[in-house]
Image 1 (tube, one colour):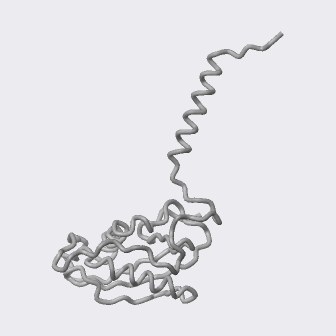
Image 2 (cartoon, rainbow, N blue to C red; image 1 turned 180 degrees about the vertical axis):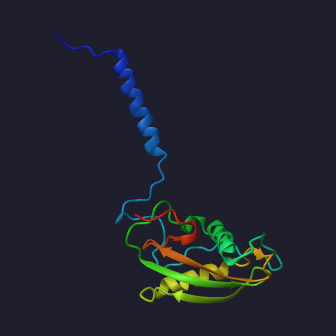
Length: 172
């Protein structure tokens, strides 16, 4: 005697497979370690966004302290480097980690960069981070402080993509 499946279960199984396929297609998880990603290697420069015209003012920040300003600065950097941000949780071993102090004047221009912890084993990353920060000027003008010195930690993946500690999605 031949077994004939109940149509209710067949339809439910097909529907579950379609839903699973749609959810898998919408996933934005980072590629597994070791799989190539479409980003330049750590030492290769990615195209920079167009620099604002001279005299153009960045939006202003209403932060009252360096910690609050750091979130505005990180959002500004992410906005200008969307294609260079590592999506998802960072892997447990990173290529480089650096702690950079940035001095921003009242107009949002970068006045000084000071490495509190530079990734000395990766001088190309040091140069790329400095280039990225300087190219992002003008930053949001620290309207309530006049000028600001803020510190953020750069988490650098071997693909050349990064996250800032302020806006990180975490690390495995």
